[in-house]
Picture 1 (cartoon, helix red, strand yellow):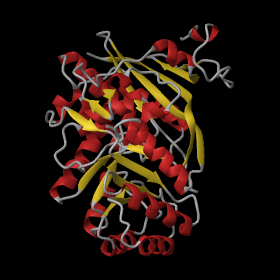
Picture 2 (picture 1 turned 30 degrees about the vertical axis):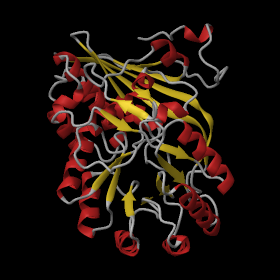
Picture 3 (picture 1 turned 120 degrees about the vertical axis):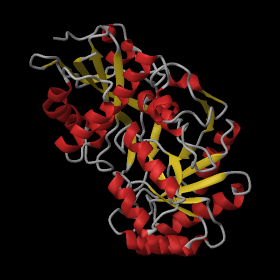
Length: 405
């Protein structure tokens, strides 16, 4: 079997409601991703997805499309897609960074190998341990009253883990939010406070001291990346778990955090960490040192969610809480059928081969703002859609697919 071509779709879909993150990331209204299709001479198509969000990531949708066109595609064309380790190794040598671009390829290759053998991708990662996983429900930045309203809504849907986004407001206000949430819901919910690098070291100490005995289950990435000694200092001060997210991108990052004893948990995001292979390796390395895993998300669509689930269902060191497989529920629409796996705040591992997810080509086309097709000949870029006519879904005129070389 040989790879004969690649298609790239930069898609943009609005959230159901704006999502308030830390002061580093602001308030988001739309989610962007690059969907990858890897075509083979056997007629099997592998699906991948990259979920860049600058400044959270160095990559952007444009850089993902450029690096796949200029570096990755020339190598992939004509290669055997089942030789995943060999392809990963070559791309590790050929590229610095660009883990989301490489991760989209890795997802597509696992989708292909699963479809070839008619087996779910998790079989090729050691096999399934969890048939189902509970969901984590995130809420954005708000007042204690707004937090309570959002938490109550999640509880009514069956959620028992809530991640509260922090880092956008002054620290004294965040302390009040945390104390109010823990005092009201701490005996019924697992609460995670995620500051997304929103605080300085001094502000983090102020928060930790300020909440006193109103303790969350987990504090995630309170400070910017780079100073593991200060993260270790925070970890030593708190009786609850400290998780790293932005500090954990590569396997080398994982090794550094482990050596510094700077975290109790790793927040793994399959797109951020470079695909199924690398995410699985990081998680298994963490297990050796007693570090737990939180399967988190990048405001992603169904392909990445499916890839993350194929990894998460194999792990023995998951945090005993909900995990972030609800990302598609925050979107006004999705280009896949991943939602079929979600019911009553639980996600069920699909039995279909590969990643276990299908793409709706009509929706994919409707939400595409940039498109690239790459074959053995030179790539041809289609016209760019700069304006979306409606946020309510694809219209008849937008269902027509662009001409592709």
